[in-house]
Length: 395
Ligand code: CP3
Image (tube, rainbow, N blue to C red):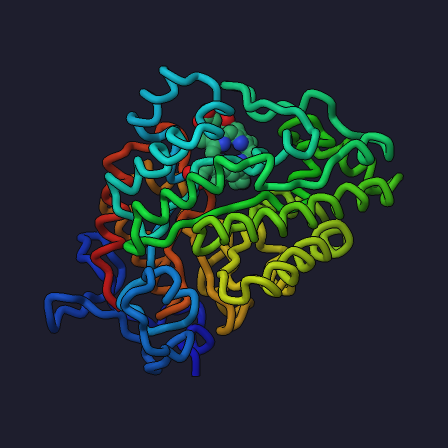
């Protein structure tokens, strides 16, 4: 029986992994590597034999018997690092930083060199493909994404070109190939794309949005127009994932950050079919490529997110990890979900939250991560502490 299924609201695991004064759980100290125990002795997934040459993250996703959860952080490459800010002073344009192979590689490797995470995410943006789809945009300091000509009509959608990654973003492919060589299977190289609904929300709203009124007006008054746009994004993002995998990405995360702005019934119409289409298309050509799906504030949609067929659901921090596991079942891997705000806390607090999350996730099929991206201003020493604790864990 899976331990998670046996857990009531009272934890049935013991033992934090790294000692901490204020931990609520008993430390198992029979040897120098504390182990996690389940009261009923079960695990989340039946462990299989580990392939040593593969990165830990891939083995964990496949349900193999790993000694600890792999760890990486969303928005790992970027603004909280002093070394990134120095590059920003020299290259103030986000587009330049994210479209120049040397800069992309250098920025992607900054956290790798300092923290040695188990996943190295490409430095890029979900909006990067837009110019290749004939949707001019920029990412403006202090303002965020700006779409110069927001889309709102059937004629606008007709102007959107399908994406040919080889032609439009060769630098992404080149950067991934270099990263794969540099990281050399000591960690997994991670690619990512935006999901159709989330991309559509930017191009229809013209940028970030609070109430998503423009895209909802389109969805609820001219659904055919929105479906035509979503279809173009679905076809394009499936191709983009295949391109990233062929270039060196060993797992790809799909960000549907704003899908949870939709009510469940609207998610089923405007997001789920397109996510499923992307997953089905990619699985045809790359059946072993792990696909990770993230949506912010996803508690209301968890079971529906799993219907997409992805291998990993990334939980945001508002979901209790044990409840998330219970709701998703033992066959799908989970990622997350420490509150990024925890990284502003004391080192003991950070340690406790890591232990709590890993204990609730159970053994195997878990990638330790935050529940959203690292926030600007996060002390780098706390990020270092997070990785140190995480990499010292043993099941
Ligand atoms: O995780 C990583 O380190 C890889 C890089 C990465 C960036 N954006 C770099 C970036 C990733 C994975 C993203 C994904 C992304 N981009 C998402 C999905 C994740 C989420 O946050 O829900 C979304 C919605 C975007 C769109 C986007 N890009 C926004 C809303 C912003 C502005 C954010 C802000 O607060 O200013 C960006 C810009 C952006 N993308 C920055 C970085 C490091 C900050 C700008 C800068 O460094 O100059």
